[in-house]
Length: 436
Image (cartoon, rainbow, N blue to C red):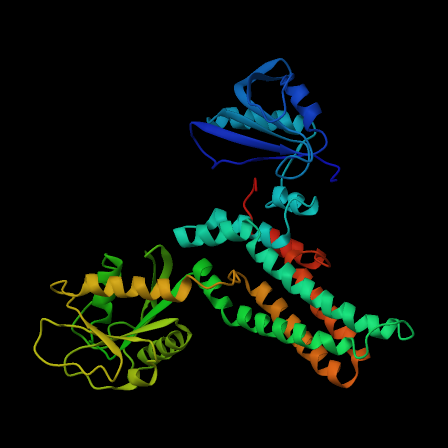
């Protein structure tokens, strides 16, 4: 266990009804005694007058947790104080005087990981849950915190170790009564595992999109009404709208919640060739953003030519026939299309519903617990490469397959922090807030 005892404010700073200070470490009992909070039954709240150097700090609700039955796995406590800044400051100064130091970002969860209360994937889920702004983000983080992702990775690793045992049994015990070609019986196990890893990697973007936001970009010709549609979807005058072609020069982003999912909506410059260097740079950025998007809404006004935008629309994108209140027809070029008018509001509700349905289709429902971080993706790709190498070696020289399979197992173990994680702990926990 860690030798020092830490504390942190677990509620938002500033004036409030209640402020909670959390403590964890071996000196929690002595610290509570030093504050006058004695006679506490573990896991039962009790009111105590907190004092230090003869001065009363507050009348607080105090909770005590005995190791290992706490969030961190250490002796822990919570001081539920009145939420005035003076009270919190007095309590904090008293704790420091008693030898308790302020916690670093993520230090409580890091101790929980180090004490075996959760693995690294679950620790990351704690940060995701704190940052969750949508129901989908919260639901995904809770599933990961519950261990769904970790159990899946553990299952992959068990299959690897089973295959490795078959390989090494034939190599290490050639004179024993083991079946002929035992190592090659690991082939079907590795084939299934490789398929599972490929599926996990292929569907992994879903989890990252839930966590980071689904990217929708408006593309089209100049004066097609992209900025007007952007303003309508964001319900505010975020983009400048004029009848002058080329008004939008840069990419304008807005964060929305649609159907319970986080969305980043981007308005872009009209896609056309331009001699104006400023507009040309805006068009370059628009093209780049269009290529990176999860979904493009191709905004077209009556009479618009296909133009440059046709080169960036991809299967599954939507043509938004804008200015439905005006005469003229808009070709959908074989894409699904909806008609809207940002002037009258016609079709906007249907467009919103279409986007919500698309988000639900793309971001929900897959059977594999979604990868939520690039770190996971890299480790799964590393494991897949090693499994494929081991499978190839199995048919030619089984004795060479063992190293590949051990490398794959190690890659999977690094996702949950089972082995070799010191080099990534700082990176993972640096993103946490103080008090968690």
